[in-house]
Every structure is written in structure tokens, then in C-alpha cells.
Length: 258
Image 1 (cartoon, rainbow, N blue to C red):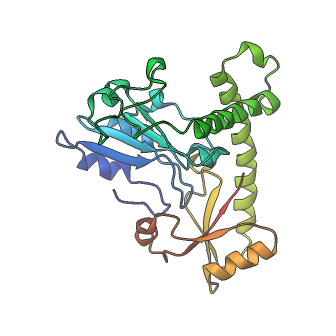
Image 2: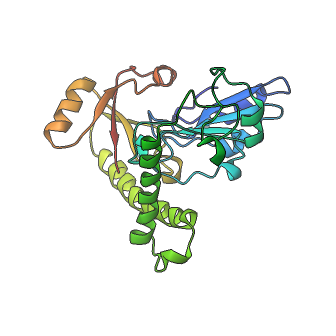
């Protein structure tokens, strides 16, 4: 799929590529390089006979995910991105998880997680990491608690956790919109600074910014920012093909706000 100058995916071009022979469409909900949020709702409508696999790793800390509204067949996230432990989480349509044949040991359970199997699964190679599952659950509960504290909820006991999460992410979104607006307004005054990604629609980007300063190496820029108590990183950020498509060096400085 081609990339536009603002780092967004060219969904119009994708529409001309997908046909009845397409088997899988894989896409990130948001770019971990530029923070651009992709139009995955539209992408899902193009699938015809294909399955969709969405990477929600960078999107999940910033926005509430709804797999049903997205019409996702598969979606993955990493709880460490939203204050949880290092583990992975996969959503898949139940009928697909039951019918697909995963690579597994013969002695592994051949069903989906359930009480009678102690939540062993054909998609796990052994006993699940219960401590990681507990940590991931606690992270989700923390995000729901933000809805109680900052989302205007006065009677959290009568609401579902999903309702509380919705309020929590509304508060997160309002906070991050303020940070995004202030950052984009401030960098306009810095000569020679390039900001990659969408800059004219706050809803179309996360609070993650890739930047380059004319005449300053990314490593030197990171050291300068850290000396000013601003944490930043530099590198490919797992998307060298994106930087190549944008005509940039694959070594890019990234700043994230939370």
C-alpha cells in the first residue's frame, strides 16, 4: 500500500488492489513511527473474501478499540503499551479461532480457553502466563478507573467496565488533544524542524511525533532533549519502509506524550 506525504495510507489505491482473490489484509490502526491513525474502518469495508488482521499496539494506549465496529477478524495489542506487563493479546472471531489449524504440540489442548481446561488453549503452547494475564487485567482496570476519576462518572458501581473505559478514554483523548495542539503550535516557531505525519487534524493522529532537525543528527537531538528533561528516542521505530517512502533517513527522532 502506498503512503501519502502526511504519512497516512492511500486507501484509494488499496481499493484498486483488493479483489476476490485477496486472502488477507493486514494493517496497523496507528503508525508507531508518525502517530498517524489510519482509516481502518474503511479498509475493513474493502475486504471482499479476505480476512482482516489489525495491529492495535500503538493505537490502544490512546483510543478505545471496538472490534465489532471495526469488523475485525483478528486484532492484536501489547498490554505493556498501556501500563501492563510484556505479553501479547490476540482477538479473533471465535469461529476462526476454532477452525484454523495452529502450529502446536500434539499434547496441547485443542479447544479454546474454558473453565474445564483451566483456560488452556489450542493457541497457547502450554500453561498460560497467569501472572501476565493478571497484570494485563489490572492495567485495564486502571484505565477504567480513569473514567471514575476524570471521566465525569459519579456512580461507577452501576456501570459496566466498558462504560468506565469509554469515559476513561474520553478523558485521555481530551488531555492528549491539548498536548498535541500545544506541541504543533510550538514547533511552528522552530526553524528547520520537520514534523512527520498528519498535522491538520488532531483526531487523525496519536500524541506521538517523529521529528527531524536540519543539520542535527537524530542521536544529538535526542541527547539535547534528554538534557532538558524531555525523554525521546531515535531509530527506525520498526518501520524503515515508512521512512523510505517519505524520503527520510531511517534514523528518526520520536517524542511521545502521555
